[in-house]
Length: 264
Image (cartoon, rainbow, N blue to C red):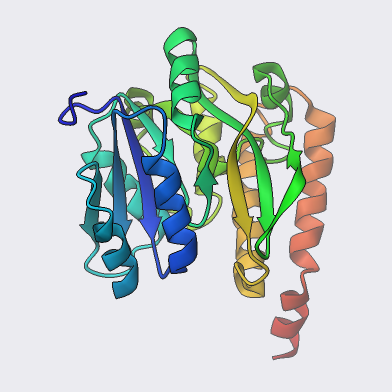
């Protein structure tokens, strides 16, 4: 294994993570059956204990880049991708964790399927520390993703595994998108090749009740709505896409914060 030329670069942005979640994430990455990777973590406001925890694993494949100030997820991921050396890039949120064969199976798929530019996977959800028995079964085929792309975001960001050369060609994440940056980029990936979700559970996503504030949630709605309107042309199911866009617009306008702002 030649660590100077990794096959896969994992990219993450770290901001004040719970140490127990971060530890579990790290253990799941270094325990992967596929070993030839690097993990680039951008310190975008991590705690001292977060950084000490990472260093305690003493794994040379883990590389930390420190932002001089908090720049947010979109910019931080572009920074990580720019310095990555892998042919493939895998996304990972630091409060989620992988099953041990995630990298191996996604790498094998992308090596064999040259017409695919990105793949995700099915996943379990963990809510308030309890892992649900059932798993999230997303639409998996390229045909269905292309048909429904303007209806909802069909690939979980933390499950992304994609070709770096295509990412570079597309110019990376659009830094004007503070939220829904993955959804916006996914639409551009779709213009360059096929996308799918592997029909296997390879990830566990942490869902926290206080992860998103109401103001952020409304802002997320707006960014997501912008993407859906942009992707309407690409969608092959115009009626369902229009209905989804209309519902999103109504949800945004009648969000609880809307009334607070009117009365303030």
